[in-house]
Length: 165
Image (tube, rainbow, N blue to C red; front, side, top):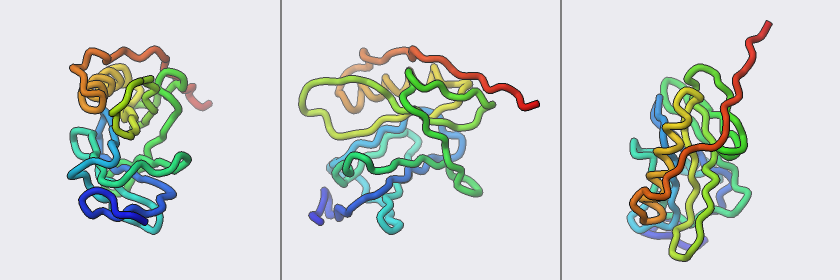
């Protein structure tokens, strides 16, 4: 495989795991092929990335092929998998206390010069609307180079789970 930026070695990636700090809520923006970006820790063909408090992960490697599986875990005593739903507008999150969940930002952009990236909102049913707005603001500012003017409010709904009898 060819070398990526800053000497990182590009490998065939079957999965990516992003690890957030315990209790993190907000944007998860992974921007690929970045000068000064980080190289992953490898576990076989799986790339592991620590998500900084900003939620922005600048990665030295090129974006992996479409279909690469993406996982999100919350660090702590034991790594806790975070449920990832579809888009934040189309797939309602389940209102279950303040458990971490994530949804993909479905945000259409056009033009050239936009780096390859993925964007998710790490949230809970209790803070989804605020986390969504914050993520769109950061996305516009960091990835699109704007001033946050394309930030938007979420249009979806939260599905409330029914108590078990």
